[in-house]
Amino acid sequence: MENLNSLEHHFLIAMPNLADSWFEKTLVYVVEDNQHGSMGLVVNLPHKLILSQLLEHFQLPTDRLNSRSDLAEQVIMMGGPVDMEHGFILHQPPGDWQKSIHLKDNLAMTVSEDFLKAVSEGNQPEKLLVCLGFAGWEAGQLNEEIQQNNWLPIPYNESLLFDIEPDQKWLVALNTLGISPESLSMEAGHD
Image (cartoon, rainbow, N blue to C red; front, top):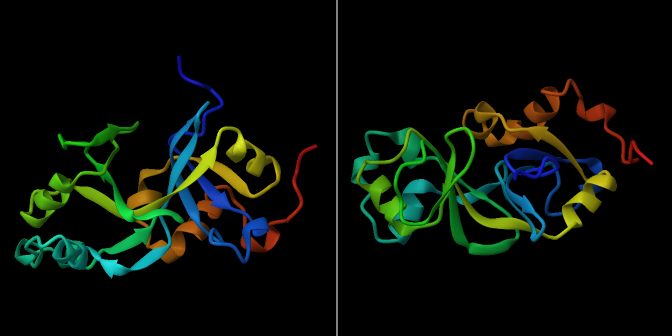
């Protein structure tokens, strides 16, 4: 039975309480949220690497990417402060990869090198976003942080994940709620 209070397949918008922290003005896609804890990927914090450099790091060819400069130059995201040497790829459609988790709305997360090999061969899914590292919370911790006004959850939006430039995602996410950054408060709005 699905947990109706789960934030899986939602976004978290960082609130002003997280200013001067690793998560300042971040947007997190929540991959997992259950009784064991929560896991998410920051989708708007660019890394210094681009996709072609990541493929080169794995000694994979990049010549097939030359016809898709948008893909070759796609910036890798810093998915979170935990385990930053490991990659997590959100993509659509899910496909058939060795280590994939199928999510809702035809979305999947893959963590296997066979995915990167396929990308290097020009066999990538239609949409993809690569993150290094992840954000993690112990059981109940994310809920507490939301109560403390650290995060504002919003429903998943495919365009927000894949189509908006990283430096605009946080602002666009706020705008989906009709909120401007100037109107944000550091005070929690509930008792």
